[in-house]
Image (cartoon, rainbow, N blue to C red):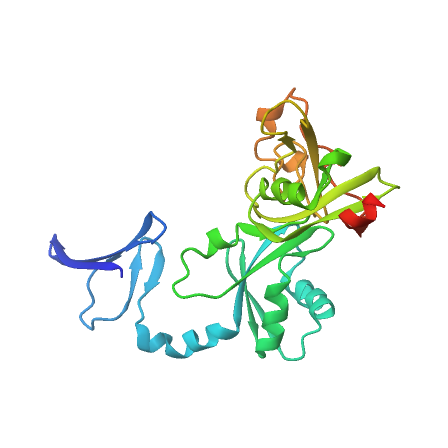
Length: 290
């Protein structure tokens, strides 16, 4: 529960009301909200000005209808170079094929809200998140109250990765689990794949990644006794929109990298080799042994 404080301060014959709310989040940290009424209105209006911005207060009764509507709402984070909202709505209509109505609204920088008229349409959209297009991706999460952590929840999304250069003797389902788990919490079970055109065998894993952090470009693996089976596997991303070859973060390209100057004269760790262009066919241990 937030801690709320209120006080009246008098200066030069005018009365100012200072209001403060302190929120502590379960995961640590918190937020502080401050508003100053100047001068204090005789009518006791709930609308006042703080600096050059108007501030409005409301209570739970005012929110009652809106909170119920939240069950049909999703919060989305657009990463990359998304189209305008009207074009986004047309694009999602073709992809989602929703049967009811859909309202899209920008709620704050980087976040967009989606209001559905049918729960089935909402469920289909959120369970297949993230949605990846040519120049952008859309990460979705269910609406929650209160929503301060929503930006943190939208930092994470399951991403399909390919793990290459795994020796034949290590190309097993058990080791595939170990390799995939080293990249993050697995959203789906890892699978063994074969692609003669792309270069042989690879493990496909779908870990939940922090989209604000650099992609791990490789995995060092080996036997516990350090005497055999040691190898370095490479990691490729499937279906990634914008990917920076300098910092390794999804959402922009090298020429727009905010850390571009820090990488001047440094050989990039990433490149076109970091992105998978095709996919192979699933195989099993049994078919490889025959």
